[in-house]
Length: 234
View 1 (cartoon, one colour):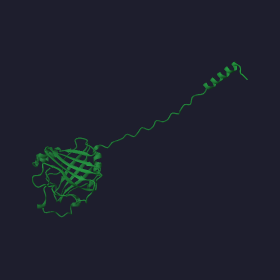
View 2 (cartoon, helix red, strand yellow):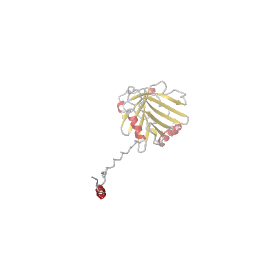
View 3 (cartoon, one colour):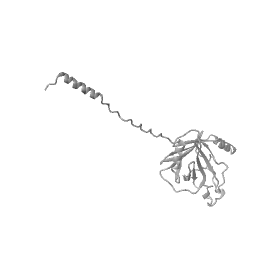
Protein backbone atom coordinates (compact mmCIF):
# COMPACT_ATOMS: atom_id res chain seq x y z
CA UNK A 1 0.00 0.00 0.00
CA UNK A 2 1.42 3.39 -0.93
CA UNK A 3 1.85 5.76 2.04
CA UNK A 4 0.70 9.33 1.66
CA UNK A 5 3.42 11.88 1.10
CA UNK A 6 2.70 13.48 4.48
CA UNK A 7 3.28 10.17 6.25
CA UNK A 8 6.57 9.69 4.46
CA UNK A 9 7.74 13.15 5.48
CA UNK A 10 6.78 12.50 9.12
CA UNK A 11 8.77 9.27 9.19
CA UNK A 12 11.83 10.96 7.68
CA UNK A 13 11.78 13.75 10.26
CA UNK A 14 11.43 11.23 13.06
CA UNK A 15 14.48 9.33 11.81
CA UNK A 16 16.53 12.53 11.74
CA UNK A 17 15.51 13.46 15.27
CA UNK A 18 16.34 9.97 16.49
CA UNK A 19 19.83 10.07 14.91
CA UNK A 20 20.57 13.49 16.35
CA UNK A 21 20.25 12.10 19.88
CA UNK A 22 23.08 9.59 19.34
CA UNK A 23 26.36 10.84 20.74
CA UNK A 24 29.46 9.77 18.83
CA UNK A 25 31.62 7.29 20.74
CA UNK A 26 34.42 9.10 22.53
CA UNK A 27 37.69 7.17 23.09
CA UNK A 28 38.92 7.02 26.66
CA UNK A 29 42.14 9.04 27.15
CA UNK A 30 45.23 6.77 27.17
CA UNK A 31 48.20 7.42 29.47
CA UNK A 32 51.27 8.77 27.71
CA UNK A 33 53.97 6.14 27.14
CA UNK A 34 56.81 6.35 29.65
CA UNK A 35 59.77 8.42 28.54
CA UNK A 36 62.79 6.28 27.58
CA UNK A 37 65.45 6.08 30.25
CA UNK A 38 68.31 8.48 29.52
CA UNK A 39 71.41 6.80 28.09
CA UNK A 40 74.31 7.59 30.40
CA UNK A 41 77.60 6.96 28.65
CA UNK A 42 80.61 6.10 30.77
CA UNK A 43 83.27 8.80 31.02
CA UNK A 44 86.16 7.82 28.73
CA UNK A 45 88.45 7.58 31.77
CA UNK A 46 86.08 5.10 33.44
CA UNK A 47 85.63 3.13 30.22
CA UNK A 48 89.41 2.92 29.80
CA UNK A 49 89.85 1.74 33.39
CA UNK A 50 87.17 -0.89 32.86
CA UNK A 51 88.89 -2.15 29.72
CA UNK A 52 92.21 -2.50 31.54
CA UNK A 53 90.60 -3.98 34.65
CA UNK A 54 89.15 -6.68 32.41
CA UNK A 55 92.72 -8.03 32.16
CA UNK A 56 93.20 -8.21 35.93
CA UNK A 57 95.10 -11.25 37.14
CA UNK A 58 96.54 -12.03 33.71
CA UNK A 59 100.03 -11.65 32.27
CA UNK A 60 100.88 -11.03 28.62
CA UNK A 61 104.03 -11.15 26.50
CA UNK A 62 105.15 -8.07 24.62
CA UNK A 63 107.65 -6.81 22.09
CA UNK A 64 109.20 -3.45 21.28
CA UNK A 65 107.67 -2.24 18.01
CA UNK A 66 109.41 1.16 17.92
CA UNK A 67 112.49 2.54 19.63
CA UNK A 68 113.83 5.66 17.96
CA UNK A 69 116.52 6.73 17.95
CA UNK A 70 117.91 3.22 18.24
CA UNK A 71 119.99 2.54 21.37
CA UNK A 72 123.69 3.14 20.79
CA UNK A 73 124.92 1.15 23.81
CA UNK A 74 123.47 -1.78 25.69
CA UNK A 75 119.76 -2.10 24.93
CA UNK A 76 117.97 -2.71 28.25
CA UNK A 77 115.09 -4.31 26.33
CA UNK A 78 117.04 -6.22 23.71
CA UNK A 79 116.67 -9.99 23.55
CA UNK A 80 114.81 -10.13 26.87
CA UNK A 81 111.29 -11.40 27.49
CA UNK A 82 108.89 -8.53 28.15
CA UNK A 83 105.85 -9.28 30.30
CA UNK A 84 103.11 -7.08 31.70
CA UNK A 85 101.11 -8.39 34.63
CA UNK A 86 97.80 -6.69 35.51
CA UNK A 87 98.36 -7.61 39.11
CA UNK A 88 96.24 -5.40 41.39
CA UNK A 89 92.91 -3.77 40.57
CA UNK A 90 90.53 -1.65 42.61
CA UNK A 91 87.82 0.83 41.68
CA UNK A 92 90.28 3.70 41.37
CA UNK A 93 93.74 2.14 40.93
CA UNK A 94 95.36 -0.52 38.75
CA UNK A 95 98.98 -1.65 39.26
CA UNK A 96 100.74 -3.25 36.30
CA UNK A 97 104.30 -4.53 36.84
CA UNK A 98 106.37 -4.45 33.65
CA UNK A 99 109.01 -7.19 33.75
CA UNK A 100 112.09 -7.04 31.54
CA UNK A 101 113.82 -10.39 31.79
CA UNK A 102 114.95 -10.77 35.41
CA UNK A 103 114.48 -7.06 36.09
CA UNK A 104 111.33 -6.65 38.17
CA UNK A 105 111.89 -3.01 39.08
CA UNK A 106 109.05 -1.35 37.17
CA UNK A 107 105.36 -0.99 37.99
CA UNK A 108 102.90 1.23 36.14
CA UNK A 109 100.34 2.76 38.50
CA UNK A 110 97.12 3.91 36.82
CA UNK A 111 94.81 5.97 39.04
CA UNK A 112 91.36 7.51 38.49
CA UNK A 113 91.35 11.16 39.54
CA UNK A 114 88.52 13.67 39.89
CA UNK A 115 89.10 14.88 36.34
CA UNK A 116 90.66 11.96 34.48
CA UNK A 117 93.55 9.54 34.92
CA UNK A 118 97.07 9.65 36.35
CA UNK A 119 99.99 7.42 35.32
CA UNK A 120 102.99 7.00 37.61
CA UNK A 121 106.08 4.81 37.29
CA UNK A 122 107.05 3.06 40.52
CA UNK A 123 110.74 2.13 40.23
CA UNK A 124 112.38 0.00 42.95
CA UNK A 125 115.70 -1.62 43.70
CA UNK A 126 115.75 -5.35 44.32
CA UNK A 127 115.78 -4.80 48.09
CA UNK A 128 112.46 -2.96 47.71
CA UNK A 129 113.85 0.52 48.28
CA UNK A 130 112.88 3.37 45.97
CA UNK A 131 114.98 4.17 42.96
CA UNK A 132 116.32 7.71 42.94
CA UNK A 133 114.00 8.44 40.03
CA UNK A 134 110.57 7.02 40.83
CA UNK A 135 106.87 7.87 40.87
CA UNK A 136 107.23 10.12 37.86
CA UNK A 137 104.54 10.53 35.23
CA UNK A 138 101.60 12.79 34.56
CA UNK A 139 97.84 13.30 34.35
CA UNK A 140 95.54 13.37 31.36
CA UNK A 141 94.84 16.85 30.00
CA UNK A 142 92.02 15.73 27.69
CA UNK A 143 89.16 13.24 28.01
CA UNK A 144 90.89 10.71 25.77
CA UNK A 145 88.86 7.66 24.83
CA UNK A 146 87.93 4.21 26.06
CA UNK A 147 90.90 2.82 24.14
CA UNK A 148 93.66 5.46 24.44
CA UNK A 149 94.82 7.87 27.14
CA UNK A 150 97.80 10.24 27.11
CA UNK A 151 99.74 11.58 30.10
CA UNK A 152 101.90 14.72 29.65
CA UNK A 153 104.71 15.02 32.18
CA UNK A 154 103.70 16.84 35.38
CA UNK A 155 105.61 19.54 37.27
CA UNK A 156 106.71 17.19 40.05
CA UNK A 157 108.31 14.85 37.53
CA UNK A 158 110.04 17.67 35.67
CA UNK A 159 111.61 18.84 38.93
CA UNK A 160 112.80 15.29 39.64
CA UNK A 161 114.26 14.91 36.17
CA UNK A 162 116.08 18.24 36.46
CA UNK A 163 117.58 17.26 39.82
CA UNK A 164 118.94 14.12 38.20
CA UNK A 165 120.36 15.75 35.05
CA UNK A 166 117.56 14.31 32.91
CA UNK A 167 116.19 17.52 31.43
CA UNK A 168 115.59 15.73 28.14
CA UNK A 169 112.67 13.96 29.82
CA UNK A 170 110.92 17.23 30.72
CA UNK A 171 108.90 17.09 27.50
CA UNK A 172 107.77 13.48 27.91
CA UNK A 173 104.27 12.30 27.13
CA UNK A 174 103.32 8.75 28.02
CA UNK A 175 100.36 6.90 26.56
CA UNK A 176 98.48 3.68 27.11
CA UNK A 177 96.32 2.07 24.46
CA UNK A 178 94.09 -0.99 24.53
CA UNK A 179 92.20 -2.97 21.92
CA UNK A 180 90.30 -5.44 24.15
CA UNK A 181 91.02 -9.02 23.23
CA UNK A 182 93.81 -8.00 20.87
CA UNK A 183 96.53 -5.58 22.01
CA UNK A 184 97.76 -3.36 24.84
CA UNK A 185 100.44 -0.73 24.22
CA UNK A 186 102.66 1.48 26.34
CA UNK A 187 104.28 4.52 24.75
CA UNK A 188 106.84 7.16 25.62
CA UNK A 189 107.23 10.08 23.24
CA UNK A 190 108.95 13.44 23.08
CA UNK A 191 110.56 15.41 20.25
CA UNK A 192 112.83 13.05 18.31
CA UNK A 193 112.04 10.15 20.67
CA UNK A 194 109.47 7.37 20.40
CA UNK A 195 109.35 4.15 22.39
CA UNK A 196 106.42 1.76 22.05
CA UNK A 197 105.92 -1.77 23.32
CA UNK A 198 102.87 -3.84 22.41
CA UNK A 199 101.48 -6.82 24.30
CA UNK A 200 99.50 -9.66 22.75
CA UNK A 201 96.16 -9.98 24.56
CA UNK A 202 95.05 -13.02 22.59
CA UNK A 203 97.08 -15.34 24.82
CA UNK A 204 98.11 -15.22 28.46
CA UNK A 205 101.51 -16.29 29.78
CA UNK A 206 102.51 -17.59 33.24
CA UNK A 207 102.50 -14.91 35.91
CA UNK A 208 105.98 -13.56 36.65
CA UNK A 209 107.42 -13.11 40.16
CA UNK A 210 106.18 -10.28 42.35
CA UNK A 211 107.70 -6.91 41.47
CA UNK A 212 110.47 -5.65 43.68
CA UNK A 213 109.06 -3.87 46.69
CA UNK A 214 105.78 -5.81 46.75
CA UNK A 215 104.89 -7.40 50.08
CA UNK A 216 104.99 -10.90 48.67
CA UNK A 217 108.42 -10.22 47.15
CA UNK A 218 110.04 -9.99 50.59
CA UNK A 219 111.12 -13.63 50.53
CA UNK A 220 112.93 -13.36 47.21
CA UNK A 221 116.64 -14.07 47.46
CA UNK A 222 118.54 -10.77 47.20
CA UNK A 223 120.73 -10.48 44.16
CA UNK A 224 124.33 -9.42 43.98
CA UNK A 225 124.17 -5.60 43.73
CA UNK A 226 126.78 -5.74 41.00
CA UNK A 227 124.34 -7.76 38.91
CA UNK A 228 121.56 -5.17 39.05
CA UNK A 229 120.67 -3.63 35.74
CA UNK A 230 120.08 0.09 35.46
CA UNK A 231 116.60 1.27 34.62
CA UNK A 232 115.96 2.23 31.03
CA UNK A 233 116.24 5.87 30.02
CA UNK A 234 113.03 7.67 30.87
